[in-house]
Length: 364
Image (cartoon, rainbow, N blue to C red):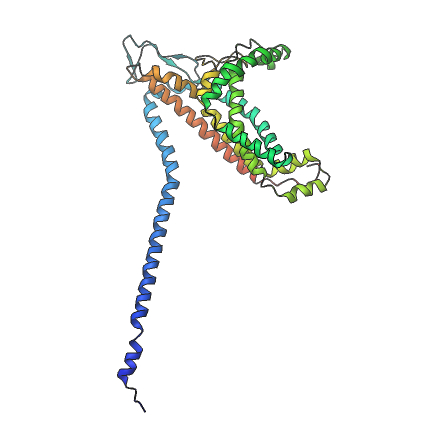
């Protein structure tokens, strides 16, 4: 018989401890690495989320700082005046409220604001129905290969530079409209006060309507591609149920498919509107670049905020006082505020529409 002493028992009891301690250390090290990686991930994602907001705030603060002297001189009337007079850069400069500016300088942004909103509104008015119709055709009606082909052309159209659209509008599209389309509209519109803006000299293809149509062509791919992807997410069961209730194709598209994704369609339209509001080169080439006055009719020459900035910036550097550059910064700040207000309004509209009940049954 072998006697088991306390020393042997202690040796057996304490023998496995080094291996358990090593495993615990490895587990602790892995846990520390996981915590450290999670902390770094939170910091990186938080920084990435803050960067767009910081960039927006930085841009607005920079524009406001640069534009403040012009805002002091131009005042709130800058938004309601129509004049655009840089003044005399050769004479002696004058000082108003501590700000140096050329003699006779007088600036107003009203025609540019109206031109920006009008051309962008026309673009959305023409582009959204066409885009939604194209998306419905691609998703609901066209064969698979034809649908892929049309989708490819939409994506290619979205990648064309704006200067190409501007050149096309100046050399081809605008002159054809001025020769064959605008005169017909101007002659046949009733001569009543509310429609008188549609009458008048059609010009040579540079003006408000041409700018709106070119912008519409430019934003169609954005709205159509987004709407196409949204319509593909509409459950087939909903459409089949509508057909079973006696709806035809038009009623299914109008009361089920488009209403199912209407919040997304509004969002896509706002994306297109934002593109139209900030478009520069194409509008500068087809708008006629008129400063200091409103367009006389739907076909008249006009200017927008973005196109005016890019066209006037080079000459603004010849102003030794720097006042014209500061005025252009004020104009850019106005455009930024318009864009921000448009997006905020669109978000509120999307939120309201998204909480509205979906239609069920015929006759709704």
